[in-house]
Every structure is written in structure tokens, then in C-alpha cells.
Length: 310
Image 1 (cartoon, helix red, strand yellow):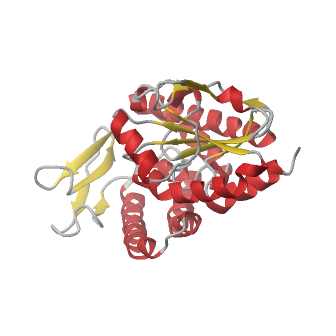
Image 2 (cartoon, rainbow, N blue to C red; image 1 turned 180 degrees about the vertical axis):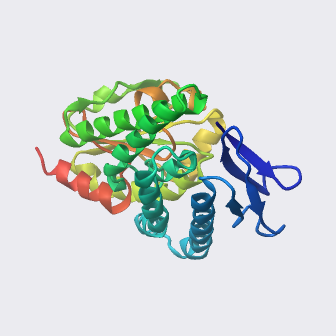
């Protein structure tokens, strides 16, 4: 059993991903225009749910392209994303609970995983049990398949992330130390800011969503810095000039900017569980993590709550 990409011509633009078992005989019906958008399948146990998934995903993608550009606020964009994704998620949950061992679940399970857009704060932890059901069924039905091992790794990773998230919200986990150089070559340490409420902001000059969020971080810094708020920016850049230029252009006026200029190879990706940027980590005055992946109103509300604690 495996996952295959079927293309119409060269490249991946007109391609559709399908699960295949030994001896599967699948029929794919589509026109040139609908091949990678809303094809229909028949002949296998995964054909009907995959056909339904493709229709729902096409509708989701279309509405997202139409409506998302009209919304400027990050928080409102997340709300819209969750709303538009809901039919896909509901379908996937029902299908997985009905038949957890169906090969189509390799595709559907991604909809139950925490996404960069939503973060764990908007994720339903009940999805973790559905993912575990897939893992159990695949271990029973496809024990020798590499895909089964990959599913087990993904479920374990999500479980670990969620447990860490619970600890973050409890404020009992200390932030790993960060000791890196600023643009002038001076080493700055995160621990030196203990006693302040600190926002660790992982970003990069090449990251468009990061640059889009920067004005909001600047606004909050100006508003709350006299109340004990600090920003500790960690760049995932490789190019020092691009990093310095973005700091200046975006008006990031706080003094704490650091980077090892290793991009995604920085050890901090592992120690802070970074899967995408922007990635924010809010610390209380004791240096413990109290929020991860917060933006917009959610971030500001949590910040106000922590600043009120003396």
C-alpha cells in the first residue's frame, strides 16, 4: 500500500494524489479542466470518499481565494479559515470514525492535524483520538508499510506538541535559553530579560506573513513597553544584510534582535518546536512559557493578563 501522484502531462500542476493497495483497479473520470480539481473515482473502497473529499476541497479552496483577500486582520483571517475548513473537517471526522483503516485516511488525516494558520489554540484535541484510531487500524492492516510508521511518528509528534501546549498554558515550563549575537555582534541572552513579560518572535526577512504581522508587534511594544513588556526577536535569516534591512524597514525599534544566521538549520527549531513562522512564544516574568502561536487580539489579551501580575 502506498501513495501515488497521477499527473496529466509533465509537472505537478495537473496532478492528483491517490492511495493504492496491491490489486487495486481504480477508474478515474475527469476532463482536462477538472483532472486535478474535481475528478471522480470508482472501483476501490477509497474511491467514493476521495471523490467527496476532492469536491469539498475544491469548494474550500475557491471560497478561500475569493474571501481571504478582503480581510486584513490576522485574527479575522484565522476565523474565516476555520469556518471555511469546517465542512472538510466534519467529513473527515465522520469518514475516519466509520472506517479508520481506509487508505483514504492517509489524505484525510492532514485535516485533523494542527495547522500553522490555526495553531493549537484553535485546534480540537478530540482530533488526536481520531488520529490514534487511524494509527491503530493501519498497524493492524498494514504493519509492514512505511506509511504506517510515518503515521505513528506524526501522531506521536502531535501528542507531544499538545502536551507541551498544555504545560505552556499552565505556565510551568521554562523557556529554553537563547544566547545569540545581535546585528552588531554582541551576544544577547534571553534569560537577561527575566522579570519582564517577553514575547519571543521567530521571524525572517523573507517571510511575508512575518512582515505583515510586524506592525502589530511594533504597536504593542510601543503601547506596553513602559509596563514591563519586551520583545526578543529571533531571525531565521541566512543573509545578514537582508536581516538588518528588514529590521530598519519595518521599524522594529526594540533592542533585542538576534540570529545565528543558520535559517531552518538553527537548533532553536528543535528546542522550540517551530514548524513555521511567524512563531510567537510569550513568557511570564519568571521566564516560563504562557502562550505559543498567539497573534492579534489573543496575543494582546494574554499580554495584558501577564502584565497585571506583579
